[in-house]
Image 1: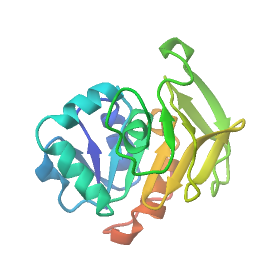
Image 2: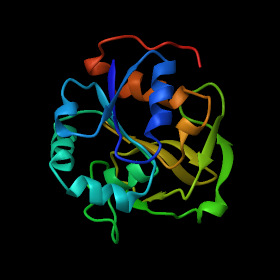
Image 3: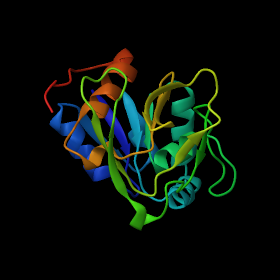
Length: 198
């Protein structure tokens, strides 16, 4: 199972380590030619405006968007979710690959970061979510499935082959969300198996 990670900035290295720990093959993507033969793609946390600038130069952004529109499974964490969702204001454009609006930094500044536990549909235990300048998901379309809420706010959602999380699973030792992405969204092109431990 080959999973690409957008590796132009942000927490891509931690996603790489998480994927390796469950037996997947991470592929750090910095150029369009590295998008070939992937089973899924992770857009990590980072600075969404910086991501927008980097994806707007060269052909990487256009090539990645084309692959995602053609069905390559995608998971956006925090800033990655901003790119995949809808929204007004900076950065623009948003790709609108999942029918929800993403409000940047809705949970506060860096100093307002926190950890909270919550249930995720399909998991047998609570997940420890790390929230850092986290976005808020609002105005969800009818095809969007909410997989987790913090109090009454959705923090993890899916539509087809697109997954978004407002929190950072790569900052914990719990690999449940990484396994969920691979087993539930990427399995259509699965080339290997994912270890159940972690």
